[in-house]
Image 1 (cartoon, rainbow, N blue to C red):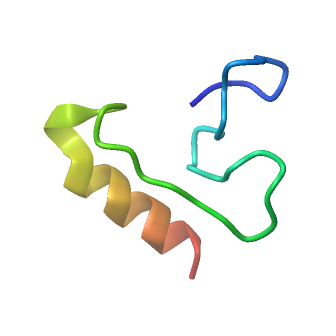
Image 2: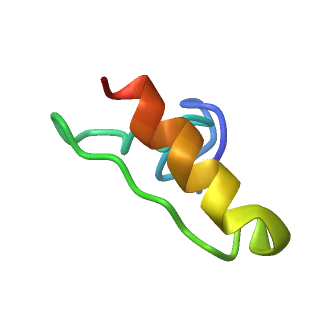
Length: 47
């Protein structure tokens, strides 16, 4: 996760994948203690 200008970032802070239409990801390694909270937050933002 990171800014669009970061060449190593593949997704923004909401999990939207750069360069792909309609694709979001949740990676447990980004926030290992709060994976469920992150997944729920991203899922809510898609509604």
